[in-house]
Image (cartoon, rainbow, N blue to C red):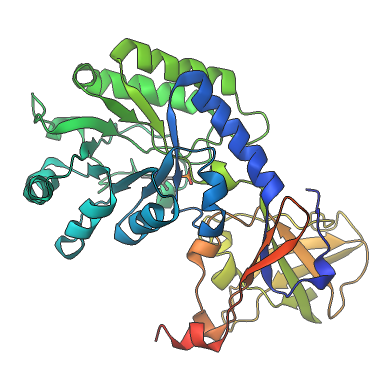
Length: 380
Ligand SMILES: *Cc1c(COP(=O)(O)O)cnc(C)c1O
């Protein structure tokens, strides 16, 4: 990926979000909205950098949240836009405030609906109420990311559905995909229609969840458009999509510095960024982030295992090869670091959090946030 900014002047470690790259994604998503009449929401779970919410809100229809804090962030930082919220189980302590900041509330089952409906009625607010369904169909192979795994707690299965939906329910929601293309959506929609199609005629909206890699190169947007139009026309529904990844895919970088190099069996380098603290999906997913100018192990002359500065033995980012030996002070730039990074950061081992930088469309780098000791201490 092309780096459009000078990294030498930036405080490392830092995340750099490139506004131009973000706009490119947003334009693609907006075109899907324009062509289909669907509404696309930012799933804040993946990306909650609210300093760019004003920009995002020029393109998307709102935000979706996994609970009170995300809902409130969307409400505060994208004023006037839709706020959707779903939680596997809502906390009664939060619910009054959730109602005050949300306009769509999706329940995990009918028990939750019964429990919280009185709060919604009492508020006097007009809220669109949905149920998350579990169509028991997913093509996700990583179990930890599979909402349709055996005994999943996420979503209501068809056998737990009443014959006739309560009148207050105006929509259904499913989320069963992860980093997938439109063929998976097509097969999923077929299952949803098979199991839940009879309910759809009387509803106002259907939310197709996230996991659609719409802004990835090669994604079949034409087919997405035709699927959305098919659903809309057949059932007369407002269709929602709520991607997280696709909004900020390939729009951010993590700039890190080599702190030391050593050798034990192979060449090792220790960076000021940690897999465990700053890119936890590298360990959790797991995956191998790209580094600008680096290759696969042994593809280039000098191969290193890159690790973080924590005491965790497994805080290893991976093996990479370089044209020249690494040395103290070298800058390494990881790409695709906007999503599921900042939102998952932690200060394990007292490791410093990377600063957040916005590379503006006018070419300026704006320091959005830097972190220090207080951010570590303040949570403990
Ligand atoms: C995680 C999640 C999303 C966003 O998923 P992406 O893979 O980031 O597109 C959307 N909706 C729900 C309910 C989710 O849990």
